[in-house]
Image (cartoon, rainbow, N blue to C red; front, side, top):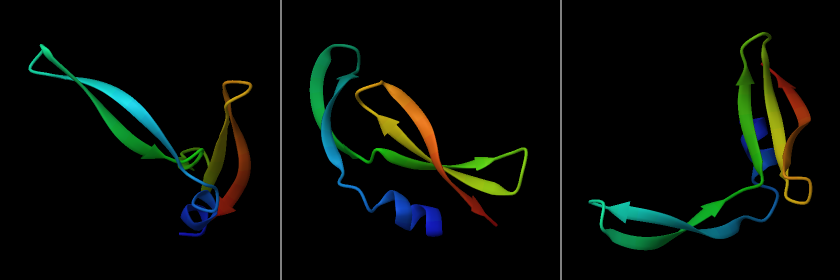
Amino acid sequence: QTCEKWAKKVKSETIEVYESKYGYIPTYNEVERFSRICFKDNGSKKILGTEYDRKLMKENVKKRFKY
């Protein structure tokens, strides 16, 4: 829960996602996404808080939460 609160402290961005229904009707849907995401680390008892850097096009671990 702590990681989820941390992840939602940044502004979300809206992106357009291309979808094709039934293979021939192209549509664009707007999707809200956050630059911070939480993952469970299988090797340890930690939740990793990652942040996507748009300039470097890379995802970095910013915080580690114990459980």
